[in-house]
Length: 304
Image (cartoon, rainbow, N blue to C red; front, side, top):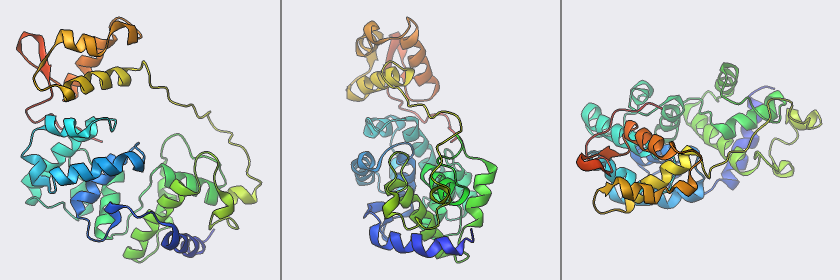
């Protein structure tokens, strides 16, 4: 399918149906865009909105976060999920201050060199904050392209080189239009071409969608398994972090046990395994006498 046949319908749909999100405001700083992209990874917009506003109210610039402790970043992150992202943002803020005089760089390579910033985040910030021409490929984009262009109900379990090349080939030539196309396709996947119960009748690509034209064949790839949460290591880690966030002073091991009691564990070593993992990830700091607290010093650099 020629790329230009997709552009006008999707961009026209976006002009009418795009959500009014603060990080899409023309006045939003590149730092605000970067924070939103990190928060939105594996987290719905409804949960990110209040967290993003609270974060920017407290740390409106990278320098303000860099001056604070990583523990405070984890504390404000709250129950947003995947708290290593908070540590990544803290490390990123320090790198922005040290390498770029406190301003988020516009250069794609410089963005990619920041700790915790991977290929997706660098492309997203370069596109959405600076209007550049990059393929921004998240789960929503992959699903739209799988259905509309290749005729598959779902994309592969993880991003493939073929998908990346396809997304790049569909970019409009003009950089500002390409940046708008990137967010428009993402929005289409989030609101219309959803994983379950897609709203095909309202899709601007209905008459061109390869999957629909082929009769909407059922997915034949690996089964898509739902994720369980209760009882997992991630769940227990969350209980421990919640207790430390709520504490005004370091907690002894007995308080950690109370926060994640044996009745919630899947195996006898789960709590200590999770606590060790939190320490290794820079999310918890062990103190003398067996006490624990949120990290007060800069955590080790994490990569995306």
